[in-house]
Amino acid sequence: MYIKNIKADGFKNLKDININTHEKINVLYGENAQGKTNLIEAIWLLSGVRSFRSTKEKDFIAIDGDRCEISLDFDNGERVQNVSIAMSKQSVRDKKVKLNGVEQSGASKLFGNLNCVVFTPEDLELSKGSPDNRRNFLDLSISQVKLSYSKVIARYDKLIQQRNALLKTVNLNDGGPNWNLLVVYDKELAKLGAYISMLRYNYIKKLSYVSSKLFDKISQGRENLDLFYQSTAIRELEGRTDYETRMKEEYLSAIKNSIEADVHSGFTNVGVHRDDLIAKINGLSARDYASQGQHRSIALVLKLSQAYIIAEEKGNTPVILLDDILSELDKKRQGFVLSEIEKMQVFITCCEKIPEIYDGRVFEIKDGRII
Image (cartoon, rainbow, N blue to C red; front, side, top):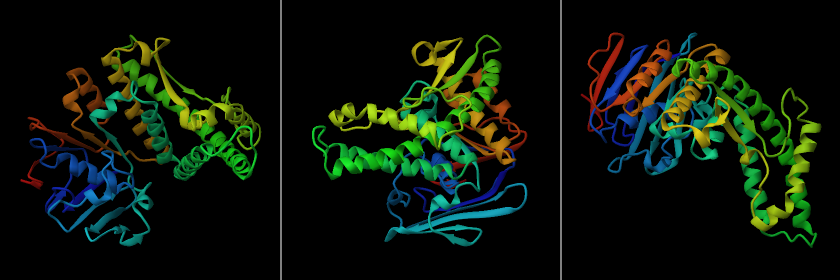
């Protein structure tokens, strides 16, 4: 899969962008705050995913602008397709999202057509940062190979918010309608949570297999990487497929056993929203013992493994978006990343022009324009 053409006008500081891209390497260079990351963000949004910079939709449009339009053509190996998003400052919510000229109900409807993997400097903290980041990484990765999964996660997250609000009104010594409603929530959470646990566990098994090979390569055979799923609700997940019966019952039991703590804290303490992806190097917890370099290597192989799994499951390679990431890596890791993605289309942002690009194109961005 590769992008053939990108157009952007009025998206943040981008003006009159219209470039034909290369099938392999595309370098976007220029000084800071000129629009390089904005162009990467536009590509990411057109893949149907929320901004990796947490940009609100009203901020897509330039401060001094009235509307924005972004679009691109991509080849998925079978045919060329077009995706586009247009919106005006007067009616931000009434944005026009189109796939091959057909209007869609929202940007999320684009998801699953153009597959991308984005890598930002913040992702280098993936293995040692917040468990929230690792859960988000897992859920997005699974959604890219199983589109229906994103709806399950959205439903679970909404139920957790409702249950947490309800917990603040419940008295342990008193029954009543709120308590009965809590029971209803718990049964639905157990149903969804058991299914999510099974899918996450199975994905991590595949992720661990691919990542361990890549980590062996980047460490030159000196270190072993293993990944595990840490569940707060289900004790054993290996080989489990009974998410509709015994897994659901086990999950529900874990929620019930935590009800006293939940009421006191006003928060649901057990469930997939509290689970984690655990990494170990040579049997030791990476979070507790890994060096800064090892953490960066883990982050690199996790992202590369995400791309490889998409390629295997979907039958074509994703587009790689490297936003100012190479400048954060030493020469060894730079070479490792570039060698592993050489068969994929890649967009690289950087502040200085890369001297020699044999199989690609270089675009200079200044004040939101390609010059």
